[in-house]
Length: 342
Image (cartoon, rainbow, N blue to C red; front, side, top):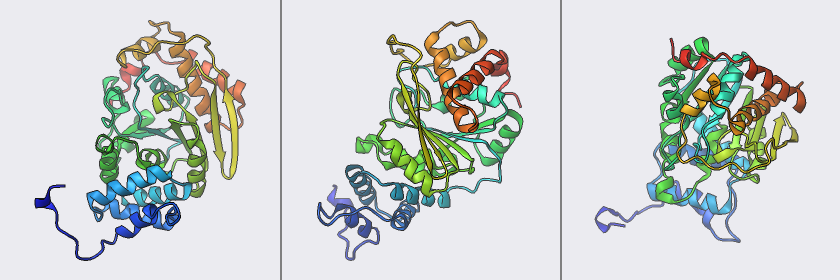
């Protein structure tokens, strides 16, 4: 620390109490209550905590590992601070914060199939916080699919196109800044988890991806406390909401207080090589029928199947898969070309 910019505090800072709760040692530290978590994170978002305190707070949480109650409190603080959205009806909240590294973003085609089925889908995410990844905002722009800059644009896009993406920086800039601390801290923090649970428009269904299966229970605990009617969590490719067809995928469904675990079995046995640079040209080619790629098609169908299990509780695995296949066969080849119109 540069001594020229350091002033010795004369009184204890109000935020210090939260750092002390987390960092008082093995015998003295504890988790935050939901109310404490909400209060602490609200102070951070309002800029009332010093940068050194924010770093200490996030990394102490990382070492301790956050609880469902803490995550619920953090999300509530974010919802109170974010720009107020209009009363918009959406069917599915799609959190997209990881970016693709090893494969192309096939999940975007699954979103198009769901929109084709009549569902209104709101996507939110952040980009650029990890080098070498293709993020949803860039991919959507390159495909001329709707990216909004405000809630008014979201409303127009949902009404005319059935889907809309709004970047985190547009509705919760304080949280956006925290997401981009990763290069400074060298690690992911609880911020990367809580962003997936924001559900700004209060969609009845939320779909989330995790990097590690152990986080599934944590997501479900927080979603239950937040009163999320239905939610689906699974380990997706690169941390995005995308089924990996070369692996069995455990789907963790939450409906009210009821938790269900299903297994979406792998469709391909052989290993598939990573792509050198993720891009969107293969998505257009697959959608228009000029590319034959078993991995890509199965990633789209698997992701669509998982989402349908969430959106249509009456469907079992076989019926959801059949519905996904029917949507794929009936897809409009010109959909990508027309998506940006209006």
